[in-house]
Length: 316
Image 1 (cartoon, rainbow, N blue to C red):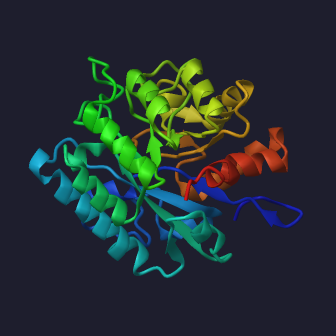
Image 2 (cartoon, rainbow, N blue to C red):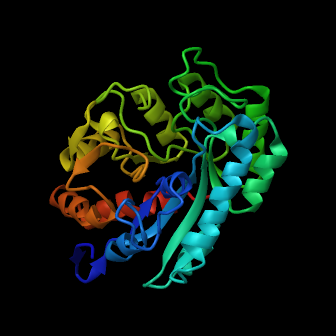
């Protein structure tokens, strides 16, 4: 379990993992204890993860006409294979749901990574929101009906449909996730969204990858009293396939240096990336991160980074 000071356990709110994608791609994977998952039931129980976000990510390989069906399949996996067999996991749709968690329970939040799954149909988005999605990223890396992604050469912002998506998220008090979005799209979201957030992005100044956020973007999130999750994707930490916990702390401290002590958390991207941070290879290893945090930050600061900064921005 996580490191304690004065018998108080530091809880964790992880804003992004891709367990559902892995289970979608390989139907043999068992959420209970599969060694192929960085986040499974055993890992959740062995760590102090209090809230874990589960993303719906429909891969590029799925035919456009089948993307919504694929998203629904992942929703079903979430309810039937993650929640139903495990009464100690509870669906999170509001702050009250988090507050109601018992000491031995973990909250599971459903999110959408990229609006490719809804095509150009707001009814499909409304359906996913009604099924429990609480956070929506407009794009993955490329273009869709809503906007351009971070790797789309055109670099366009939100379309008229994309603005409709943001309006729907505002109406539902759902997070609008800017991770993976083009820079122009980011600034459109800052203008249109009531609840902008970056679930899994790092600092461009430290690692100039298109998926990372510039100083101006980070400062804009801080100005909006939002939060960004430092991610454990090695390419976004160090620029290659290897990274250490010190790299994670370097990006964290950089956000703090811009004034973001109250605006930074963690979005691991466990199960969504090939490279692994040394000594932080899966959810069981969160203890190692906590131990390093406590070498440099106070208990109060560590509690903000690990849990409170995301928890306090949940709009519902």
